[in-house]
Image 1 (cartoon, rainbow, N blue to C red):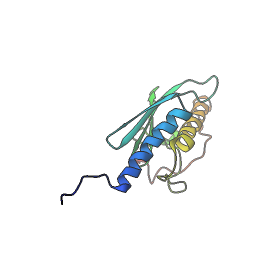
Image 2 (image 1 turned 60 degrees about the vertical axis):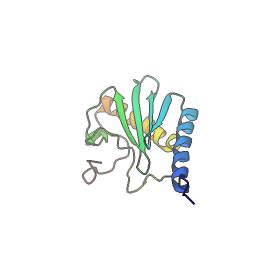
Image 3 (image 1 turned 90 degrees about the vertical axis):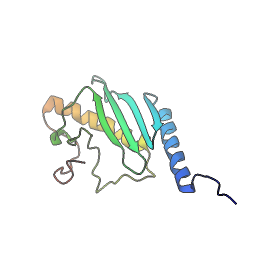
Image 4 (image 1 turned 60 degrees about the horizontal axis):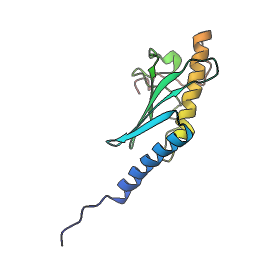
Amino acid sequence: MAKRPWISRDRGINERRFAIQKALVEKHFPCFKCKLAHRCLECDGVITPSEGCGSYRVRISYTRGGVPRVRIKDPQIIPSSTIHMYNNGALCLYEPRETPWRGSDNLHEKIIPWIAEWLVFYELYLVCGKWFGPEAPHASFAKE
């Protein structure tokens, strides 16, 4: 009897989890449009952190088995540990040793609110020249 091809249960769960993440982001944040391709979920959207602030075009990239990475696509922001960005331009949204990303976490509940919060602190930084948000040392993981 020949074996029938099938998707393993674990792989099927992971695929559904990404489809659910996509649906939840688009439901709770219609300003984001997401696409699933090659084990990666990419969500593009525009966030205006507060009234009177500029708008920022952001991209969330979430590869299966990894952690979400967030970049500001427009306007361009020069990476700097002073404003809690990694050398590669990804935002430093949380301290990974204190608050590790878990596969059961949801983008719409954690990452998108953290992006908005980061943008508020960035806007304050532009005005005051000081980062008022939570801080974590970047020396040990600056390259992300």
